[in-house]
Length: 333
Image (cartoon, rainbow, N blue to C red; front, side, top):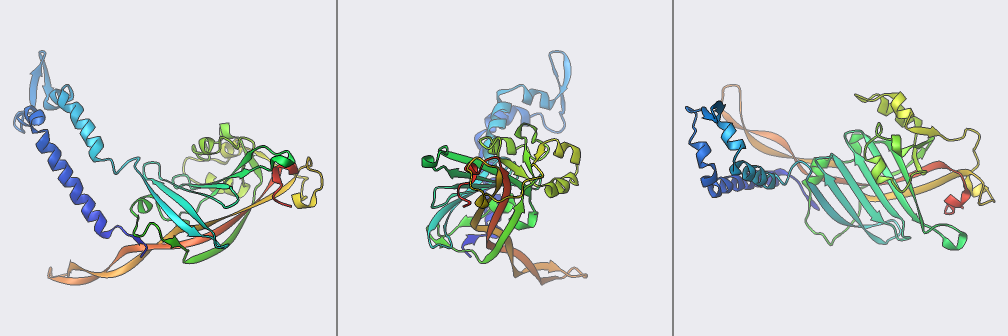
């Protein structure tokens, strides 16, 4: 497999964790000694005339500060820890681009980012907790045609958890050959989205709190679908009223595509397509044998399944959405 799984690494990580904790206790034995002396049989003491338990002395000492700091260092691999992979991917045109995939376990996020050969910067963010996928496109402008240096669009859609491996699984992957050029095992084709509303970023918290920061440059160009609002409304703690309050619907009368409009200042329906050339879309399981006990308690070999790699995919996405001027959609001609 091109990526290592978690089987042996988990055991090694647990062992390393225990070694670090034991080493820390030995190094800080003197600082902790007064608290260890309290023992199980001496659970309570007096401090300033008040009866207190042994934890009182610990929390009001320099040892407590060292304990907090060192435990934060020891547990650096959990909580808000991030892991990143840099993947060399060959696209369908034969060019090689580099993808950056970052996993944030504490936030339960995965961020995939790459730059296309035409300069377009694509950022895909998956918020597993809220089942939201954000795709941000930064497209370089055509200054000779009156456009700004670049424009940014964001598309928020419902994410199905089985479409990408979890942030925890992603963080455990390691690349054996970082310089190898990757190609996906499966092409999932193209998925089309017809957006129906703008998102008001200052009211976007019911969708996901990450939308406002990720799409800050797309204040008037962040889009969503009604069908996804209805799906999110079914999640615990959500409601359709709060979700709809964060959006503004497109005009109902417009149906003309931008490639059919001649005036650069006329409104139209724009189409933007992007492809994620390589991403981990699932886990692979291998069969092995492990020790187990039968009904009589006798030990015997049992067949078990364990994670041994990942499945990789490619997928294209096409978005259709309203623009107030064709000038904002010059690529769709």
